[in-house]
Image 1: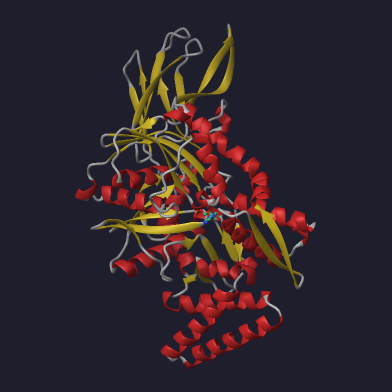
Image 2: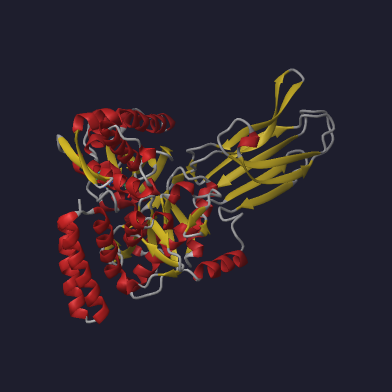
Amino acid sequence: MIVGIDLGTTNSLIAYFSEEGPRIIPNRLGKNLTPSVVSVDEEGNVYVGETARERMSLYPGSVAQTFKRSMGTERDYVLSGRHFRPEELSSMILRALKEDAESWLGEEVTEAVISVPAYFDDKRRKATKRAGELAGLRVERMISEPTAAAVAYGLYDKTQDTRFLVFDLGGGTFDVSILELYHNILEVRAVAGDNYLGGEDFTEVMARLFLQKRKLQLQKLDEKEQVRLYRQAEKAKREISGKDQVVMSFLYQEEMLEETVTAREYEDACEELLMKIREPVKKSLSDAGLKLGDIDEVLLIGGATRLSLVRDFLIRLFRKFPDTKLNPDETVALGAAVQAAMKERREEVREVILTDVCSFTLGTDVVVEYEEGRYENGRFCPIIERNTVIPASHTERLYTVRDNQEKVCVKILQGESRFSKNNLYLGELMVEIPRAPRGQESIDVTYTYDINSLLEVEVTVNSTGEKQKMIIKGQENQMTDEEITRRMEELAYLKLQPRDFEENRLVLLRAERMYEEALGDRRKKLDHYITAFEAALDKGEHDEIVDAREALNEILEKEDD
Ligand code: AMP
């Protein structure tokens, strides 16, 4: 079974293609969303999702989150003294999702289609693929998140000849894509985005508003207080949609502080973020050669599109109501499951043909003559430009720059800079050419890029017809099989907590955290129920445990603010 996975900045989901179409697989706690949070304790036990997030306020040094933002970098995360790279943390999420899916489906899951932001470059895509491999999943295909969303929408609702704009504001990334559905062909026309903008920035604004009103400084709060502040800011942010004001409370140095934040104040404070949102929208439209009015439908995905101020902003901008038929948190995972079904060649989905765009520019290094006889080295010559619909094949003819030049080295580069040195080096090809006065000999450089991130480069010497070819796989530069096996073994000593006791553990952690935050009678009450639950756990009687857990849970639900 091939599954579809949305490996999100804030939350991750796993889905499969059932007889009734794509379906989300609930996790061990019965929830569709698994927070993309990982915690490792001193003994090397790994906690994933809600349990890991709950550990944040109690053991801040053992928890990592929003590491998707650092995918493809060398960033080092230290959890309880152990070192991890972003893809290793991601692999722990994937491992938990895989286990959940296997137990739900009753069969082994060995392959996945994983979604990535359209803006992810090759390095980040490779890191994502490696995360899959470290989790024991084959990842032959990745799908960009907006494409997945459009697939999910397109399949349910085949309106013909429609131009969509997919607006994806997740926890930490923002993507805009323009797609066209024409008969059964779904084509991505343009993508744009901002890797450093998302729902968390809106939480940040709320937290800062609170601090400002209280004349407090973030740096003065200790780590636990900061975690609590952001938790309350997140809550207030979610509450404010559709309301005139919210009351945000925060326990600071044994004192419960409360502040009212009005919708107006919050909107004003978010103005800068809304301006930032406008840029990629404009860029994608201009890349696709379209105007705002050409868009027939706006699809919203990503949890942060639930913010009413974001929706209102879009309604004002497009003068139409966005389409929210599908749950914005689940759309991408459902689309990835459809793509998985396409890969399996399931009959139900054969009719949808998918194209994508290349989200970065591929080109080569050239010497340019900027004045008669004066040359500049190291300039980047784009061959397949960003936002070209793929599969695509383009040829560029290059001429010799020196008399009697014998060789040309074609460097294969990826990036947007005018200067080669700032772009990512993917490989090179060397060809020999007959001696001749400069400018007389030429080569044709053809780049062919397909939907599986496979780049084929062919260089032809025009006078001799000699050809050289090179294929750069999306998978290249990845760890070797031995390296992956070794790191898998190293990571294997870290035990993913057994699924069975997850609920008990989560309730206890949550209770402990609330105990720390509470005072007086509230504290006593919590203590009473926690002790009763612990006693039941010690006895090991199933029914008693369930009863005590429910009693404790009820108190927690009532008291958690
Ligand atoms: P995602 O990465 O798509 O899971 O999006 C997560 C982001 O959506 C987080 O920043 C959440 O705070 C935000 N979010 C989720 N639900 C809501 C809501 N009801 N109102 C505002 N923001 C939300």
